[in-house]
Image 1 (cartoon, helix red, strand yellow):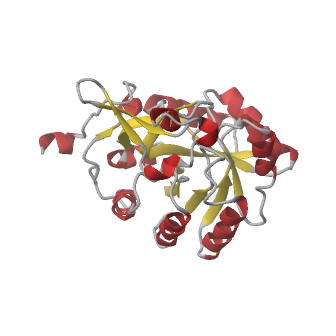
Image 2 (cartoon, one colour; image 1 turned 180 degrees about the vertical axis):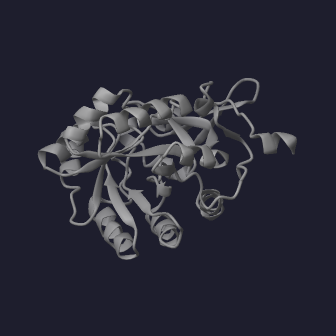
Length: 296
């Protein structure tokens, strides 16, 4: 089993992004997916900057992919996706429009965690268009992964499967920017206000329970999902890769815990407040402890 580092979901300054990936080049992650996936107004890193970074990470021995926006709203955004192709670097689609662009360009591509694939027929159609790696929708769990794994083998599809194993769960996208609205700013004149919230804006219930995280046009979960204690199960299911979404500036301890789990060590979550409900077929924000954690 391998590790994939998903794109940074939040809006960070360019220097912070570059420093983050300088560290990531030293982590034991085989695959790194980069690019702006949430909002095209986040222009600290432009397309050429992402391409330069992709080449640098490739030279460090990483399998690198450039990822598309998850919500295409304008012709300029459409055209920016058309220009993502780069020799020696993979492509990741987060929108069916991006998948169609890559198909028309005759590129093989992967599907990120925004491209919802819920049945084997959909997977087969996208595979015919060039899909070679996909991510199980975050609200599906062990039961659905088993079903997909069986169907992929039955249909002899040359495709790798990833599971979103760590990070704030991507729940919804909207044409409206909730961060701008929270601060009483129009979306078109937001002044890049997301830079002031490098881990989003926490949304609590009236009882003080953390429910969601606002991230521009995106709504994330309030808790981090973390499946590090499920690695043994995932290996038995034949999962190709766990997908780790950056949840903080320093992911070193989290990456290390997953590597130790992949190496065969039993590791409990290093997150204080995490969830794993979807994996167990329950509500996403639920947490079921492993037997070892429950005993402690």
